Length: 295
Ligand code: SF4
Ligand code: SF4
Image (cartoon, rainbow, N blue to C red; front, top):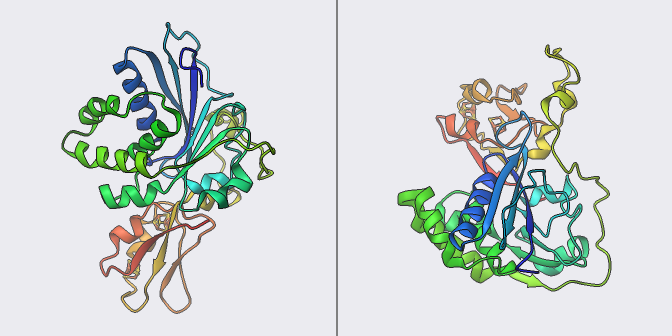
């Protein structure tokens, strides 16, 4: 990677995972080193769990005037392994670029699908974040992997921005960042072209007018056409031995996807569940556990 040229980065995450914060911290770290940088997000009208893009441009030598979305990135970072199979994360990635993925899989298991003429780096950021922070929010963890895989700036340049952003929680976030820096596994480019998922990447998420064509009034009745369960990174698992059939999970689910069963218990319709965890948080009997998706 040419350090004296413009470097463009695309972050793939989900609402609530911190992709936008990652991009902002990346820009601040670059600015800390005297570089020029910008960070900006792109997302549609959806909320927590929806796919989100964020972008960076970093230039060592001068102002950055272009403000458009990054379509041919030097670096792609994937915060959620589930996104690998619903979007083409390598769309436009430069041949000499770098792909950094959060995944529990070994690099040799990822390489056949996502290896290519770019450098590939994998780290189990979710596990690191859970251990260091107690929650699977991987934004600062993935920054450590990014720095190690790209040498885009010094790891120490993140210290002040992270302290400023996270205050009392900065220490654990920096621990997660350092652990990912140490644990990321990197594979150099392979000659063969990457095997694709067959999914065409929507390079920039559509705005609300494209989702709702020409329409200030939303007609009811089409929500079932959108299988929002694809956005989920975790799902609820019921333990009916603890359940008292109170129905609070049914009442509180913001997606309306908790359904009553014939026996009086409830279940989540995983075609639509976005994995927000509200049912688990509201259950008075601790009968619902949120479990990470494995694929
Ligand atoms: S409340 Fe539970 S069932 Fe409803 S979307 Fe959130 S995690 Fe899924
Ligand atoms: S909130 Fe908990 S106890 Fe109440 S019905 Fe749902 S799973 Fe059962």
